[in-house]
Amino acid sequence: MEADLRLQIKDLLVSKSNLKQQVYDNTFNLFAELKDVLHEFSTEIDEELEECLDKRIRIEYIDKGKFEARVVVAGDMLVFAMHTNIFTFEREHRIWQTPYVQADRANSYCGVINIYNFLADSFKNKRADDEGYLIGRIFVNREGKFFVEGKRQDRWKVEEFGCEQISREALLEVLERAVLYSLGFDLLMPSYDEIKRVSVEQFDSRMENTQFQTGKRLGYDFRSDDI
Image (cartoon, rainbow, N blue to C red):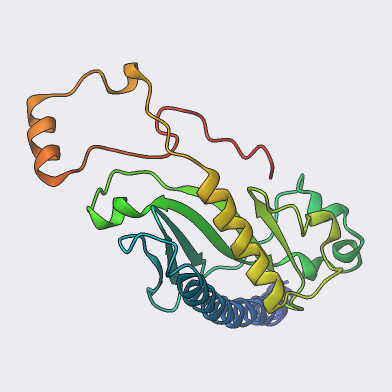
């Protein structure tokens, strides 16, 4: 019995650990290519609009290391963050209905790159309490097959997972869709009841540090209605 358990442990370590490492390497390489796409996009847009935009309006790429990159587009900041772990999905997820995963459950293991939308001023003015919003997620597996969840990211649905290899062109389109959504995702004034009370300490400290909490949907629901 003990030998049998030990054998199961070793088999699982070999199969699952190798699989997850393969997915991780694929995701890491993909994120490196995505960073290149972000940089190229930012440079091209900035040059194309140089004569049309106020000089104070920035289109800027910021590399934050191996697992994070940012793109500033006027008043918005898109943060792209690669998670360092590998995931599979809950039993109710639609991925399990795809022929691709039904043929091999190992295809369900994915790395993920999250896309967040913040206000650029939240970072500029160090407003640590400001809220950002998850507007997209890129999932990629060991074979480079992918799907995308998120706001306006309906081009590569989970139902079609396994049909297409991720490419530089796909990454660019995901980026452009995220930028379009963010630019149209306007900052709403919080409801009166949400901000009607503030203590002297809060007012003094936050005025000093310009840290009144702000978010595009502060005080309102933010739904994943088109995911």
